[in-house]
Amino acid sequence: MSWLRTRSCVGSVSMVVMFCLLPLARPSVGDEAKEITGPPTWYVSTVVSGRGGYRVTHYWSLGPTLRAETMLGVRPITTIVRGNRYLVFDELRGEGVEVKRSPLAIAEDATRGRPFGNDLERLIRASGERVEAGVLNGIPAEIWRVTNSTGRRTVWVAVGESEVPLRVENFDRESGDSATLNYSNWASGFEIPERFFEPVAGLQIQKLEYDEWVAESLKGPVRGLPILYPELIHGFRAN
Image 1 (cartoon, rainbow, N blue to C red):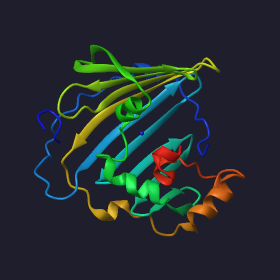
Image 2 (image 1 turned 135 degrees about the horizontal axis):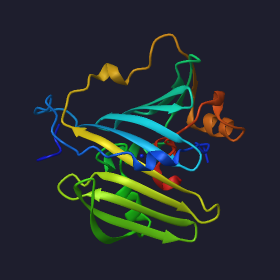
Image 3 (image 1 turned 180 degrees about the horizontal axis):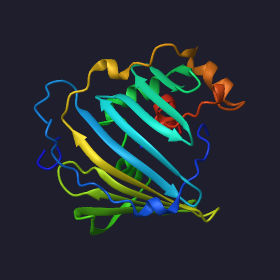
């Protein structure tokens, strides 16, 4: 892949403006890159920044299988999506919730190349358009935008075979708040063992069917655990 070998249930997360200036690493071939015959693998890190604070996340995927590690204050929140199960746990508290995913969410696994970093596809679904070309930290990019009654979203996408997102800028018209998501260190084509997508031992995990979880979540986050990727439980078209 030439230079590229080697994303109602979520509470708002505070963000810090200084991270808007964080440099983006150029997607590049890592020393460990080699031909992988199994499902495609991906990694990226993100920083979400805005007026009140920040959120840092690391993502890995093996085909449709996801592991994401997010710092929410001092809490390390890990999300694992594998097959028909969505698991979120807080290792500090030793607690987790495992939810059976909806049939729609499971079916949509086959429609995307990876379970994160699909900002351009979402923007196009929302009738977004390409507005101009540009360069972001030395990387040639296309800039896509959608503007509607709720606000404005702009996505910077790398030009080339990969078309990975580099930056997402959001403006909320009602609140006047803005936030920026920067992607760094895109990598693909490396090996990930399947055991990496298993929870740590010793967790107290509450297992729920989809309908049970929906009913419980209407009262608030189940066990206080945030669902950061609700489309991977409900399905994108259900959100």
